[in-house]
Image (cartoon, rainbow, N blue to C red; front, side):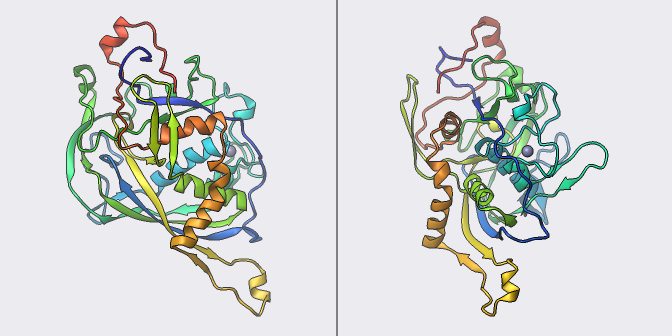
Length: 359
Ligand SMILES: [Zn+2]
């Protein structure tokens, strides 16, 4: 879509690599890997909305009267990033998925995201690998005001169909994944919908930027590689510079940021996630044999920063096509001048050429 237009389509499909390095997860009976806890915060940078599991629910999900981000939403977000960065399988049942991208079938042969986040076999005597992380709910730490907005219903139109279309051909190829651009201009409002889309829109009360949530991630028995991948998809990158081959802008600078909740095409849900403390628990069998029992290792401030830098270096240095495109989608530059919107019904009627701008 709109190659010749000034506006940008809100999402892109980025090419991903085939599943890499399948193996059994570390067994829970023998603790050889790393275990511990991350203490994290999430601050929303654009309006944020997570509804209850009911249609036409306009209020934000609450727990004990306060807005809450469910741990399952956080887990889903980190997993989908790990599938891109960590060369994971497509967790769908569709026989068109090429074998080298297809979902893991047995719990003793798992891609890294399945080893970290869990996987369920299919069919008779199906076994379950529960995963080696557990993510708590995001509880409200700093509150603020809400804003009334309109968003499109999640499963209105084509929810699944465009997810894996190739950027080049627009065809389903199961070698691409969908990501939404950040829209830093959308701090207080979101894009007004056209009359055509408004008919399918849902009025909601979103949280204005500046709300802060706190949550814990517990991990157990992760290999060094798995831990590094997990840390990368939480911490992402702080300083990225990107060259774009577009008329209105050539360079973007800033950190990579996450997106969570509803209304991503309209700019909702951009957020900053920080790891504020890591505790490594010593679970090795040596602990019980040794006279010198090790204490838990707690990392904060400079020590923590160094640990995260070391563990994410491999990913930050990765200049593969997937990672270059990933950064172009995940960058948050306050001065990003781009105007994102879906082409409207009229535009589609007039234009047969639907090629996307090059990023
Ligand atoms: Zn897998």
